[in-house]
Length: 237
Ligand SMILES: [Zn+2]
Image (cartoon, rainbow, N blue to C red; front, side, top):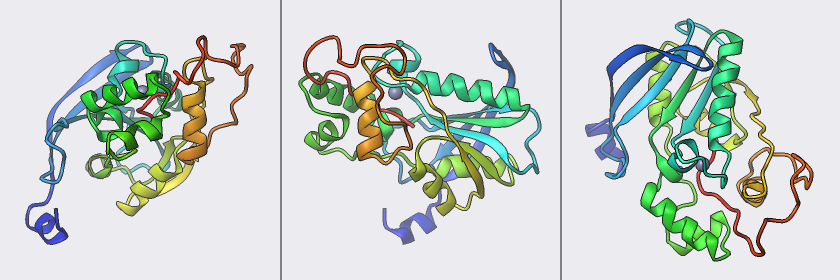
């Protein structure tokens, strides 16, 4: 959409529902927001969540995780990526710090949607890496947008954040949207035999701040269980 169209028809945020939510990491306040964005892909949900822990209004250096939905790992326990572990680690970190916000954005597969993500998985099973698979499908490697994240943080009255991420681009994107970021807090998850090469692609081709692949990071074998590159994932932080 051209910028002047966007000005005529700006995206809008609405708090739809809110309730305390007891979790294994402590009690959060779950807020569900409606996000009407005329520029958003129609396949993507307009409902997004904020899990708020403690008092964040008017606070600075608030621990914040901006997390994009990953059905395959978070619900089905897929080992192709580390999204579920990053989500749980962030919830735990926020609870331990005593305050913070976990934004859960419903933009599956780095914003390309579930079906496209699984199409890319099928190509990865044939040997493409996570970047090559999206290119073969003529899809962007990363179609995520953080406009809704910035809007929710403003709505919550967060003054500045410590961002829990390994992805420097996410910091740049949020800063461009006017969010003040004090520092980056890494979320490092050991790889497994299925996720090792995916994490290596994120480090090498997507500028994520991750340690070099270590064959014995978690005591796992250095090679995938079958020959070939079967191990790349698609969503991520
Ligand atoms: Zn994932």
